[in-house]
Length: 380
Image 1 (cartoon, one colour):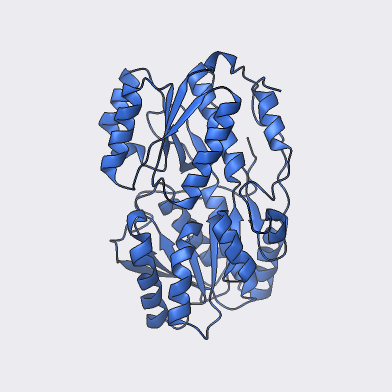
Image 2 (spheres, one colour):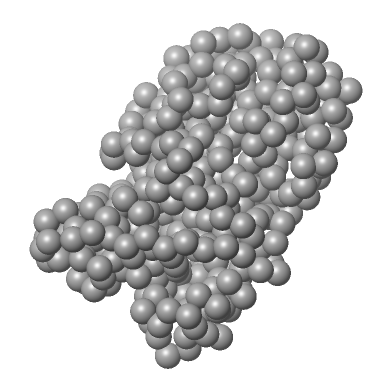
């Protein structure tokens, strides 16, 4: 379990106006926490510099013995099995599960509710040992989750709840993620990178996903309290299934409408693949960079070429160990670890070469964590 550097940001249902597919909203930052842009930039830069360090492997939790799980099957239902971040993570989890002798099945979901429902039913029919929800919202799958529980199969949300929050009601096990910490970090990077200019951010949210509301609220709070006077967030929404068809147009429209926009903040980095062409089309002579979160190799490559300024990265490989640790504990009936999550590392031009050339999943986070987890599980 990783200790967080930043305090949690409270999230309420009323904190953010949920937008329609093409909707947008705007919020103006206040005068900043001190009114001194130099101090704000210095504070942001300090946070950025600290976040560039390679994470350690302290306190992964209490040891468990997974020998009795050999031969069992775990089903995972990603929000979209073709999206790179999810496909990379699914492959990594399959590899980790194999080290414990456990079968791992990724259901070929396509971002639709119907596919999520079909995936859970298939897992129940297969008498799976556990079902992972790798993105789909548990609250939209109540009848299916109830059916899984009735069959004695634990359902485990992955990457849905912030690590400092309460988690999903009614479910005992969950793999969390440091969403709000990441959102604060890439916003702080924009503050530092713009060197005292007000940050006029175009924020691209994905309101159908659990982390979206808290991340947008964190971005808005960071611009309100930690950025130079006049900083502002304009929020647009892009559903997962429409990223490839909608994001470029949303970005172009926003940049043409507001020539002051100087930063694009998609809450998930795969959106950058479609945001970058929109910036190129609408603002070829403006220095508008992308600031985001996840650590997808294709986006780390964009850090190398300069179109993405920063990627507050998770390591999908490390996250896969965390996810499987939660699943193993659920299958064994062991006590869950509160807020169990993987770490973050801020990747920019100064350290992106550590992720490989070209960037690879799992690089840039050191080499201690695989052995540390295997020892935790009694496999090394």
